[in-house]
Length: 185
Image (tube, rainbow, N blue to C red):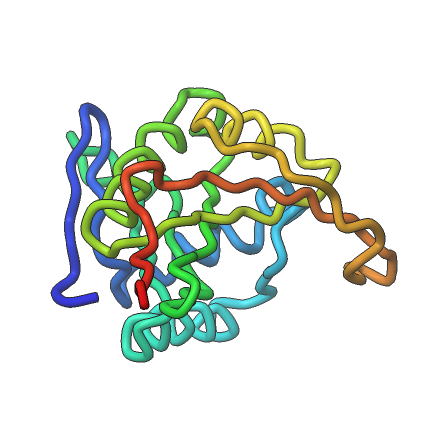
């Protein structure tokens, strides 16, 4: 994936997640509103170090990349967005995102996701960006629809969270600018 790309939009700066983001990441991933439909939560600041290690491992293993979403004007941390589960063989990757609640409903995920989806398609040569969303997470489903991700179906009762089965809605956005090379004989 090369050097770490930094992006600026009208309102946002997307930059590498750093160790000094630990408290902000903890603030988000310990917040009951944020983690209600998120697969990860942390109960302490030291425990949240695992998340920073995960971000670093994605980069080192070239299996993903995550950004801190920051206010372009003052640099304040707003949330995180990124990719994981890269499959070079199948040219696909999974997107994930979260925001601190006071920034919800302002179109910030749309603004950030447009930039990184273009990066995945144009610079990484990705053909398919996938999203797996808990079926009850209507806000994320609406955000993906606005980004022109297509709903592909639901995996029913496919995971256990908090002692209960949950279903995951599958969304995908395809890169219509690429095609697979075919060998001719």
